[in-house]
Image (cartoon, helix red, strand yellow):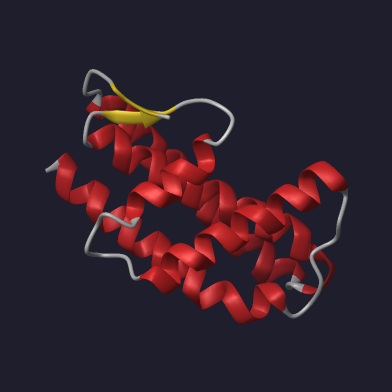
Length: 137
């Protein structure tokens, strides 16, 4: 469920900073260790970055999601924004589903999923950060 909240741009800024720190950390892992057996970790972390930034977009507009389907609804909300195509929304939902199966059911994320999707995830992250940074100006 999406609810109206009091605008808190400091929280938005904090989430953006946390996502950027995680993004730098992930890139160091990829450089030092490669993707290889780190598929599941990398997918989980990319999902957390995207989910966090998507939540920050909602927060920057005075909304947040709550309840059992909050993460799905957060991504669904992005379909209302002109910056995101239906393909990108699909990719984010697929990432959410894979991450959940990995985290809650122990299903491994097999190669070459991450290698094939990495550029798409980074493009989505870039768009989310741009939306947030415009709101922070």
